[in-house]
Image 1: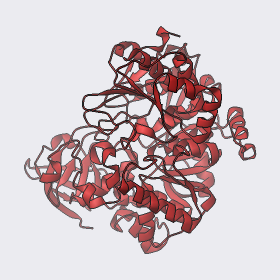
Image 2: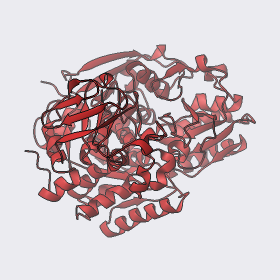
Image 3: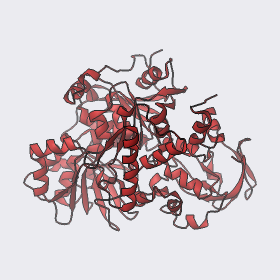
Image 4: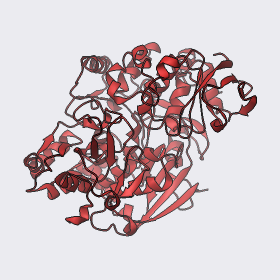
Length: 417
Length: 168
């Protein structure tokens, strides 16, 4: 019987043949925590008397959610991570280095790996053909110390995407469209596996956007074949030798098959307060915005900033709409500087912040006021997400975000493209 | 862990997220869990931290605990004295985290339970008795590995006991 990508990777790490539904103990290749979940992971390791890392070179503690720290309690939480890194020799990703998921794909995760991360968007690395999934602090703590975890092999929903995107439509619109269709719990406990001609032609950056949001449909991970595009990406990051092709068998057994015609998708927006509350940008056009945020692990990569910069070039944000831009990593920031995008953003009236999570998690750098509306390129718009339960968050692509910042209201990007 | 639980039901709707349970605006309290627990679920019901009593139950609808991987969410529900969370369905990471911190999570038809109903739950028999309504509900059994982790008092206690995963 043919195997899905999830079954293949988990089987290799469990040392036996597995099918969906099996429960196994599997080897962990990469383990990661961030500053919101890492201190608790360290405390749990202390409780278990396991101040150790099985693979220090592939264990990473990221300081990205509250970075630089806006509060003394968080500064103390950061100290816990720095001390643990010193004691065990694991990698510490300091403030200014970037969002964990972007840094993981840039420098740590390879096709065929298992990555467990104490952050729900760990599924981002699934785009490299790695089984990457989010867990809590204790699960990841055990993974760090023992180099293994227990997993239930998930059933897989195959998403086949064919056809060309219309102008002004991007990977973000595709994933919002999909989540609107299958709902926020449509893939709970399951893996998504993306394929088809559209995905084959898609850049690595856009593939990360898709996999990043798999969890917003409840999925355990969002897998994509490791192919020539993956190989070129790894080569560009000096990890060409780590490439191996990962693909499902042709007769793999899927729980469900979903076919999407990319040419039918419009620029999409998720309205408050759930990701599956989707409409077209045109349907929400005219919604006034107090803030626009371009960045995050979903859409803070160079190609995202390029799209936004092109639209903002020579323009200025609407006087009533603040604009915040946060590159996803240090390398993205440097490349964006070299390309002139950062200057464009600053001249357009944006506050450009150091690489990290920015205002996405509601900790700092752009908390909403009562009744304020923000359009963001992030992945989640739950009530209270951006630090205020009385705030309203809309999700969209970098193109929709950029044009909406100029107009001061939600705008279909095709109005100017 | 006690197998028989008794307390009041506090009802919540569908889609209670980890931001409702342990919001990002309280990020700085994550290393002070007893303090964070004073705010548990307050963004879904501002009165909840004041009215919850030891042994009570949180009763949700669909997709309870969606969102973040923050283990602080089930941890502070447990710290507030809640004996179990009942819901029609749970988000994956929350469900796994709850077991890891020793908080029972039960999948059942919560539409039949109303706010403030008195419940008696026998975890080993798999029965929820709504004393107020005089009805009995059943819940789906947990996978064996989760029963093992829960009965050991959570994942850290499980690893402490065996030094490794012991699945059988």
